[in-house]
Amino acid sequence: FVEGQDCQTKNHLASPDEIIARTHARAQAFEKNANAVIFTGCALISDDKSSKQCISTLVCYGKAYIVIPQKQ
Image (cartoon, rainbow, N blue to C red):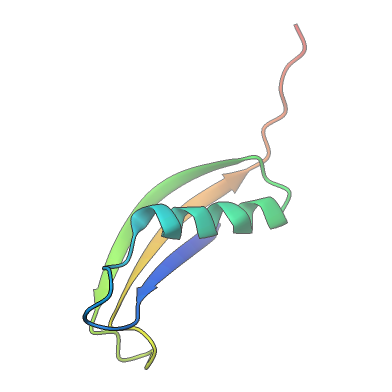
């Protein structure tokens, strides 16, 4: 299981980006020596009270796999 997130720190800055969140999840998968990720979904958390640094946060979830190519 992996997750990645992107954070909007101020109102005038860009909204959280799904590409960045997915890239962070892929980096997490790489750290686990996985070579494939299947994303199960993303969620936008607006007005994130749990983090004083983020106005909104986009979190993407996925499953990391190790795929072994078959020899032909």
